Length: 96
Image 1 (tube, rainbow, N blue to C red):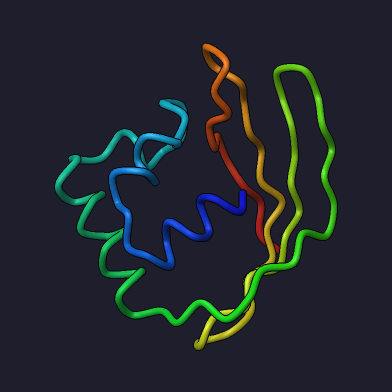
Image 2: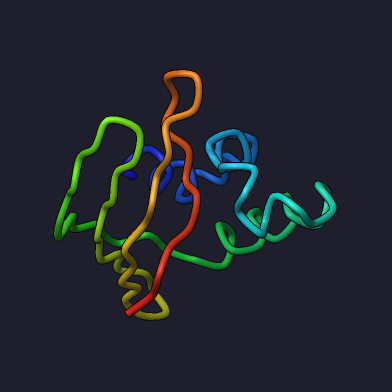
């Protein structure tokens, strides 16, 4: 979770895309549109801080509840990560 937050802050679109599970709806749109969307969000946002609120660790499935403070507000999400070939991928999230 922290690495994806940092990647958004730094505009590392390829990292975000590489750490997203193929089941995620973003992975189904045109790659250039997805990449542009990530880049635009990163450019238009100032990343102020990240607080991990809860971490539920499983062998192949984990959840991270977090609060991200951005210049345009606070975002709270509970993210679901799935392990694929030893690598954790962001599958989905529910917003508070």
